[in-house]
Amino acid sequence: MTPAKRLLLVGGSATHLSKARASGADILWVRLPEETGPVDTGDGVEVVHADYADAETLRRLAQEAHAVRPFDAAVSLTEPGLDPAARVNDQLGLAGTGFEVAHRFTDKYLMRRRLAEAAAPGIRLVACALVEDERSLRDFGAAHGYPFIVKPTCGTASFGVLKVDGPELTAAAWAEIGRLRASDHPLVHAYDLGEFIMEEYIDGPLCSAEAFSFDGHHVVATVTEAITEESNHVHVGHAIPARVSPAVEADVVRVTGAVLDALGYRDGATHTEFKLTPEGPVLIETQARVGGALLNQLISTVYGLDLQELAFSWPLGVARAVSERPKPRGGAASWLIVTEPGKVREVRGLDEILAKPDTVGVDLWVGPGDVVRSFDGQWDGLGHVASKGDDTTDAIERCRRSLAELRILTD
Image (cartoon, rainbow, N blue to C red; front, side, top):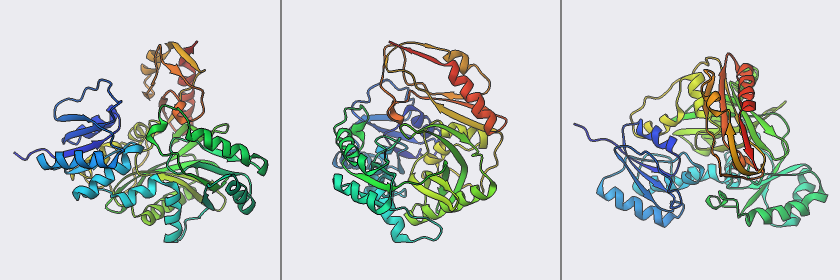
């Protein structure tokens, strides 16, 4: 009998663990020390709590565990775990993405520098620079015009994204950067807010390409339509397939492949965001993981393709490559759950939503007694409601109706 493969899972959620278990591998799951909540791990799973963001801590842990029984792959599907998993791949000589490539995705300034160096045809480059002080903000605006965008080079979920509309607002932007660096937000500790990048502002609707790469062959499962809250730049809604023309979709697919090739990415899931302009799609950023907002469930519902399961089974050598883009069956959409700040007193309507035949999923993160923060970024959302429909528009309408039925009462 052939022994089971062995997987090192770096960070992530119970959902990620369940997807990893579907590969049939034995799993060593490294969680942060503060992640002590109960999880039904099942057989073949060992859990270790360690600060995997500390390179030396994870290096020793991986080396010692690998010496007892070698790993076949190291994978993470959570942003703070991507670079650490890549370091393990380098350290142990595993076949997955290494740190040099992975860090081009987690560092937005490095991503843009690499794309400029590659000079790949078809990729429109935007002006960018690192924030050094308030004067650098004024200089960038003078050189490239207003408005422009400021955001952490290594952030995620729209946290800390600022739009500087004019020279009179550079002082306020610099002050806000200082406030963000000193923030006590409960999730900030997992990200480096030391560096901020300035980028030319691109106007137009937002979309993203959800792809999986098989030894350098990039398959875009879907193009996702994103709906953004203008007040804080948070992506509150996601819908598939995006309601764009075949020509626009083809452009997004083509540029996605060019971006991934330029960054040297060959294997695994990616979530690549674009603004759509009359001159074509313009890259905003890309992540070497499956997108959030229940996107994996949406894609599985509409296309029958589970990108999270592939993220584990492909590097273990137990999955077949997908050669062509799948065809959609209907549409699906998800929407961010928000409510007024305060302590949660009661949740109403959840059971009724879960019982609906068109509900794809609900991932509500709060319950009675939990404290709701002000809605300043994606992290301050309370989860998502996702629904399916006959097409994208129908799915959005069903999703919004279900969202309206969910009442989270706070004091």
